[in-house]
Length: 225
Image (cartoon, rainbow, N blue to C red; front, side, top):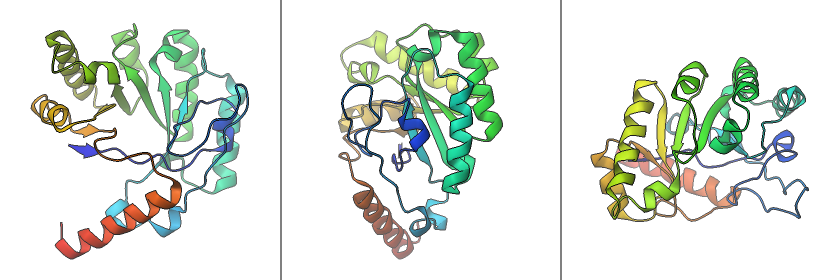
């Protein structure tokens, strides 16, 4: 199983709309933008980390309108990053609030070249046909399903179905909230290749993430793997 890319940067445009991950920001009072943290991409862009990307979490229901897309485009240009280096994670419940508007926003974001991930997947009521029609990159299986796999055969079956469906749709499938080796071994048996959670790493600041990546680069160079 592989770890997903670390949450590296909180874009200003995303912060105005999004609830963010604690690995990159500290939430302020409700209705305020969290504190942003900029990650030094230029110091870690090596062949070892060629697939490194930024991530932001959007939980507004329904999804923001076209002004949001314009803000994302402006911020990408201002920061000078490639659109393909940005992934926006959209909560499944935010999507199903208005499937039509969600599809329009996602298509506009994909037109910019941004990566799209659907998070907390498996507990909402997303249409399979909607998933097939939308230009998505990733599905992230809800942590509640991962935590109950060992004791609940139904949760295990749902996880397996999501993994198989994601692969059929050519999407990367990530297990959220992985906390122990038992879950890792079970996910491997279900052919889920990616995971994130406390089993892999505690929440990290931008500086800690940079140091970890640099150490990984040195280890890779030393072992040749």
